[in-house]
Image 1 (spheres, helix red, strand yellow):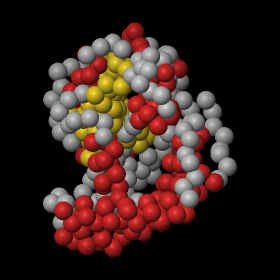
Image 2 (cartoon, helix red, strand yellow; image 1 turned 90 degrees about the vertical axis):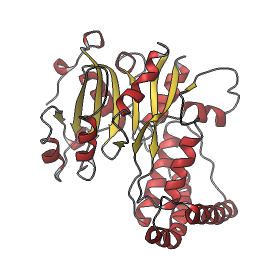
Image 3 (tube, rainbow, N blue to C red; image 1 turned 30 degrees about the vertical axis):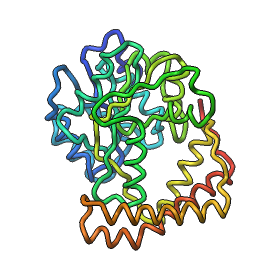
Image 4 (cartoon, rainbow, N blue to C red; image 1 turned 180 degrees about the vertical axis):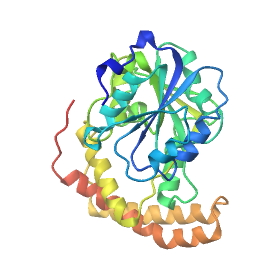
Length: 322
């Protein structure tokens, strides 16, 4: 059992970085993640802290292969997206806390350097988001959405900074400026354990953190060279529920999601299918067999996406803690 006596005060942090990974039945990628992390080229001190919330597969056996990894186990009932990340921040021995999910694999041995380098630019930079590269088996809709989202944050060779100013005049711009994903991220420990902690919400805790960081007058950075391989492996039937959860999560944290009309859905589905088919035909990174399956399956993902969004907008919101 973890108690507050296990917490490390920010002023007593003895390492440069703590890499915190939240796991639950993450056997598919955890070995590759830990192998990459133990071989990082990093001019500093760091630890790897895994918080497991009741895995029943081989996750714990795979973690045991790495004796330097610090493992903390909590009951599954105690897990919360924001709550458990806050726990990681309090347990961390590093002055910077880097977060990975159990399906995000660092793309190079310079990942740790790149995800933490922006903090040296200014003390006002308190949170950094890295890039995501879709895995080769990602279905086309997800593959090109991931690429589009992260290409939109700035060129792949530099660091982009986001902050509050009078340019932000509407909610759409604010959502773009505050966007944050903690699949691959880092933040200052003293900020997470003090002024701007994660909020204990059922979903979209990272979007809230991004908003809170900007609202508090700090700067959020995007570090494209700090890339991870990541894309959620989902069947067509699972994608509907995923989009429902995402839509509900955004609404829960105060981000307005408009109900798309049926004509809008038809237009978006048709346009999306055609665009993805063209991208897929030209994509040299995808083999012939995956292209063929993508042409047949991708239309169903587009339908499920908007079905899930409409369900998420229409359904009553769940309660959550602040």
